[in-house]
Length: 299
Ligand SMILES: [Fe+2]
Image 1 (cartoon, rainbow, N blue to C red):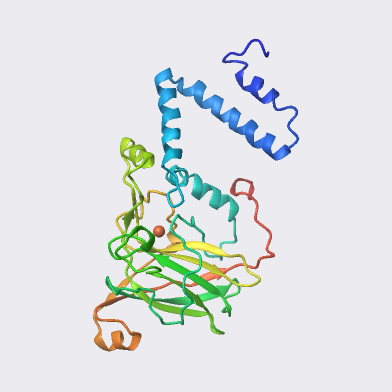
Image 2 (image 1 turned 120 degrees about the vertical axis):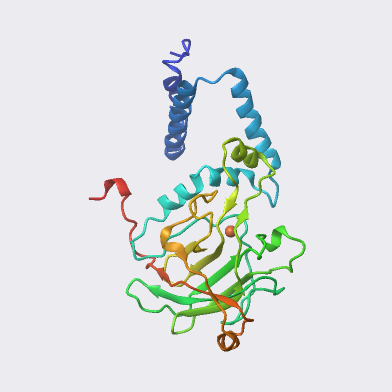
C-alpha cells in the first residue's frame, strides 16, 4: 500500500499513517477531512492549474487576515459553514429564540445604559424605538437579563469600520428589571455589504453572488441559569432577506419595523417624528436543559 499510492489506495494510505495518533478526536476529525478531501479531488479531477489556483486562493485569504480583518471567518460565513456550526451547537426546543452567528463586529464592553436610553451617539438616521420582553420557556419574565446590542449606522457601517462615527456608536448593554422588559432608542439599521475587497469578494463575484446582508440589530441575551442566545432581529421587507450573504436569516427573527407619523407618540417615546418601532420578545431556555438529538434522528 505504502509503495502503491494511487487513486484507489490514496485515502486509506493517508488514514493508515495516523495509526499512532493518541488524540482520538483529532484522528476522527482528520480522518473525515481526508475522506472528504480525497473524494472531492476524485470527483472534480482538478488540473494542476486549478490546484495551484486553490493553493494561491487560500494563501491570499490568510495574508489578508490581521487583528481586525478575518477573511477565513468570512469564507466560512459565505460558504454556510458558520451557520451550520451554529445550528449544530444550538439545538434547542422550539420555544427558545433562535440563534445566528456572532459576526465580526461585536465589541466587548459596550456602555451599560438605562432602559429607554439611546444607543445612537450621533443622532444620524431615522429614529427607532425598540422594545420587548425577555421570557423563560413558561412565558414568565426574566429579571436581571443582560441584553448586549449592536447595529450598523443608517448607511450600513459599524462604528469600528467607520472613522466618521463616535466610538461605541450604536452599541449598548441593558439589564431587565422585574418585568423582564427592555426598551431603548436607536436608528433604523441598514442592509450592508460584508467586506468584499478580499478573496471572499472575488469568490462571490465569480460565483454570481452579491455581498449584501439584510438590515438587522444584533443581540446577545444572557441571564443567570439560562443559556445565552446570540442572535439578530431582522427588518421585515428588506430586499436581502432571501439572499443573505452569510445565510443568517431565520423566519422567526424577522419583525416589522413600523413607521409612525405621530407627534404626541414621538414625544412620549423621546424620539423625533416621524419614527419607527420594532418589538421582539426573547425566550431563554434553562442552562440545565439537555441538548435535543440531531434533526435526522428525531421521530
Ligand atoms: Fe451585522
